[in-house]
Length: 110
Ligand code: FES
Image 1 (cartoon, protein in one colour):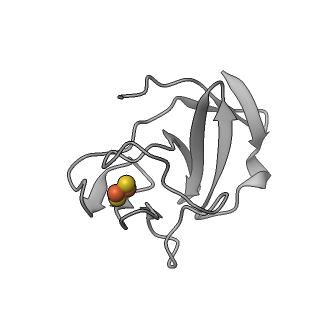
Image 2 (cartoon, protein in one colour):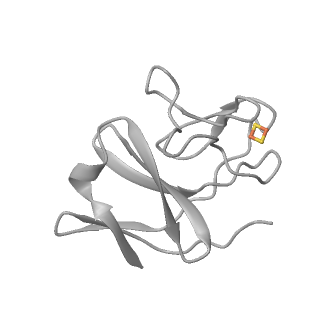
Image 3 (cartoon, protein in one colour):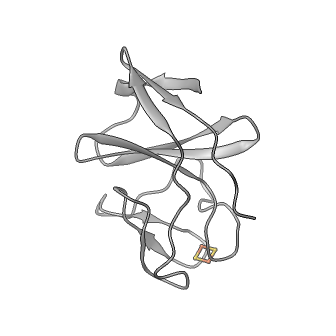
């Protein structure tokens, strides 16, 4: 695993992206908890965002894919609506140690 940032670097209901090895990983804080997913949309296998660190919808409730508008639950990565509905983001191991966020590697699914 590698340290990517401090916990205070990610605000409530916001997300940031980090390179972990060769992988772009989204770290999202929602409801006081941190979660990490590959920045890889299950619809077409491309990154979710066009703008750096722009992943949340306007209400700060869902992660959104900028390509075709799929919405994902921040808590578990499940796609609730959009072309990949029923599919989900690939979870990435995450650990909080001494105020730092550590992220591991996940196997890409494609
Ligand atoms: S690539 Fe994400 S919804 Fe189409």
